[in-house]
Each structure stands twice: as structure tokens, then as C-alpha cells.
Length: 222
Ligand SMILES: *Cc1c(COP(=O)(O)O)cnc(C)c1O
Image (tube, rainbow, N blue to C red):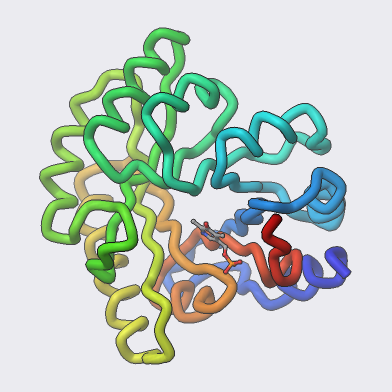
């Protein structure tokens, strides 16, 4: 089942997006067992993304195949210390004090951590992230922090059946990404797209998609 899903998704993902960039699939592994995660990895998944620090820690030693590790969920400042040095890319940097803590802890460990700035593209109260109009000033402030490297932007589109709206929002994200990328050669990733909307996102220029349901099936919440 998981093997087939992974193969089917891999077959559907274009090698490159309309912007000529490689598309990275990050498996969203919240609530998945270590066995299922390892199955996805054996089937060809090379990047996995966690939402919860406790789950990340509990499963850490059981994960095989050395995938790249992503943190994609809301991150509390007091839990940053458990992740430092173990996460290749933090997608959900949605406020200045989180960036400060990540930089401080990374500096303490003698490393530089790669991050994305999360943008609340749908201006949703239920979601974190900088407003589109705030991103540039947040970028400038976070850019000053010594132990972080900003690699791009991340967004979650709103849940909506309005494809036109979703396309517009995804294009706005690509526009903002291009604007910052023009001044920062570290920019490489636009993380946007989940199981329900990744096609729209890749067409608009997303180059990193985070898939849970389409790889693992519907989540079993405990
Ligand atoms: C769960 C989750 C996903 C994947 O969601 P699906 O709809 O199951 O693909 C992607 N991004 C984030 C931040 C998530 O929490």
C-alpha cells in the first residue's frame, strides 16, 4: 500500500517544475509508525518531515536509511533544544523569537541551521506565519542572526475548493520568493503543497511539497 502510493506519487511528480527546478517530496510523517515511515523510505522517499517534537524524539533511533530530516510543524521555543543538530531544514519559522532561539542554540552547538520563513498566505487566524507584507522586514531582521541560513519560504494554502483563489495565492508566494531570491543566493526552496493542492503549487512554482495522506493514506489520530 505505502510502496504503491510512493511509486504512484513519484511517477506523478514532474522531475522539474515550470521554473526548471528539482521538486523535493517531504513525507509528512505525523502519527505514522516507525515501520510505515521506514517503508516509505525503502520505497524511495529521501526526505521526512515531523510536526511534533516528542514524536520526532521517540521515533528518531528507529528511522532507517538516513533520510534528510525536516521540521514542518508549529515549534515551541522551549523545545528547540531537542532538535538542534538533528534537523536539516526548519520549515516553520513563523516569528522572530523562534528564529532567535534557533540561532542561539545553533551557535551554542557550533552549527548553522537552515530555515525557511513561514508565510501566512491566506491570512488565516488559525495559522502561524508572517503576513506577505511582513516577510521582507522579517527576512532582514532574521538575516542578521549569526547561526541561521535562510533557504527560502514555506506556506500552507487555505483549505478551499476555489482553485482560482489557490492559484493566485500560490503565485503570490512564488513572486515573493523570487523577489528575495534575487538578493540572496542561499534561497533554493519554496515549500508549498500538500496532498490536496500540490499540483496547483508545483504549477505555480513550488519546488518542495509536503505529502502525508497521499503517501500513507488517511491519518489515524490516536
Ligand atoms: C500534515 C501536514 C502536511 C501533509 O498533509 P496531507 O494533507 O496529509 O498531505 C503538510 N504540511 C504540514 C505542515 C502538515 O502538518
